Length: 347
Image (cartoon, rainbow, N blue to C red; front, side, top):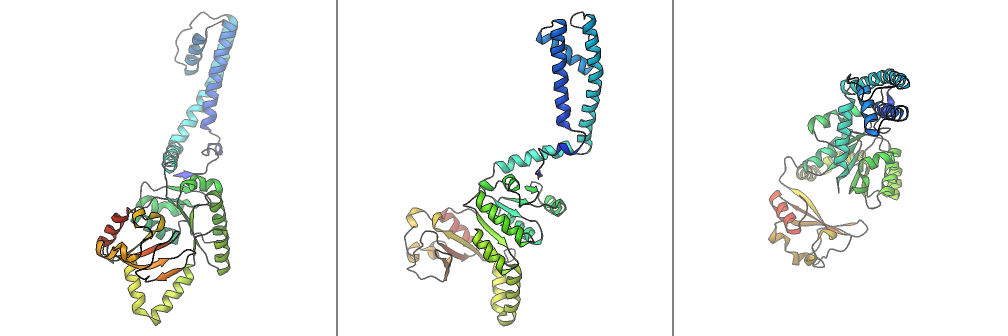
């Protein structure tokens, strides 16, 4: 679990483990310097005496102490009793309350996120966020979830023990950095509030200009603002849902077929996108008919994404893929596997 702590949040309690460690060091430093100055001990002897005094193991003196030395050691013993009691109480609190293990988990997960490259950040783990994560997990795509409400993440933790997530507000830049935004390839923000989504789009684009951003929106005016802010795509679930339900009345067969082929759990048909930058050099600047995708892999090219984001359905055989463009192909799992292998695409 990853949190945005004030340096891991220890200062939120009176039993501060860092303070306890600092007090131990101070006590040892005072004891060592005091014995060196008062008794003329060497650094090693003074340090040894400070340690055995602090630990109260009861070993004898390294050298006989003078009256001033005994007064100093007596005061040091009384001072150390309080420090040892505080250290034991702080350590016990962190073990019993789980803070110690929580911190260990924090460090472990933060280390994993720090090594991630090309992952997707999902902001919000509500009903849309859950569907998004389920899809990413199905395709073995690395992801990090950002969710402010820890209760919403319980199902994710139960389903995937090694899930990576940040419990914090996604509108904070430090939270996005904790999720590795500078190394991510994409970000999906699915919060309920359009203003929060817009703020995340603005921040994310500023922190990683090359990031591909998909945002949820409720209002049409919000969609326009998000696109201007740098979102690659803005999805309006209510609009899509209404269109889908209305089309079920006018063209039920077409919609049911589309629903079938997009349900990856029951259909044997899938889609894949081939971008220009993914295409090996020997295939570039060649028309579709010379790629021989149908004969070599079995897939069909059903869409052509042009520069500027416009699409052409069923492109002709002489169509050539240009920079910033992509082909959309359809096929069964075996055909898509052969297609990915041909172009060295990730599975």
